[in-house]
Image 1 (tube, one colour):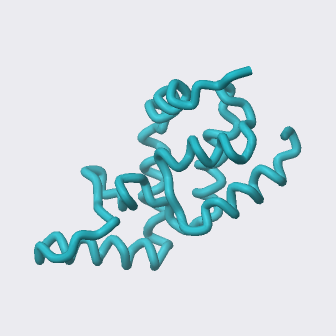
Image 2 (cartoon, rainbow, N blue to C red):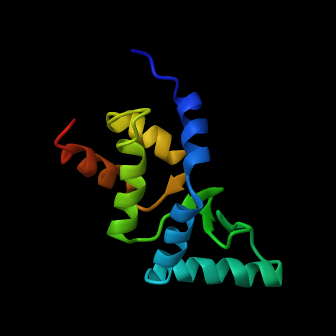
Length: 125
């Protein structure tokens, strides 16, 4: 069976609910590294300083190269992974497909390893 990742991405991206974005925003308060990056972006923006891979969107979410930077919170990462991996449209994609789909909208350090571990622990896969 051939899966059109672009079509799925459009469907899933529109389903990234405001609730998920709000949960990401709440989780940012507990990630000191996230807050340091965000403060640096705000400072650079004020001073018109160096160009950075980081920016802040209109919802006050930190972006890394235009993609949502997920805070270092295991519950938040699990929520993002579950939202896609357990979605009935794609229903438990393998590691390569999952990381390909996630990388379009989300980023966090060590993402590849954490996704591999997540998929390896999935009892339905």
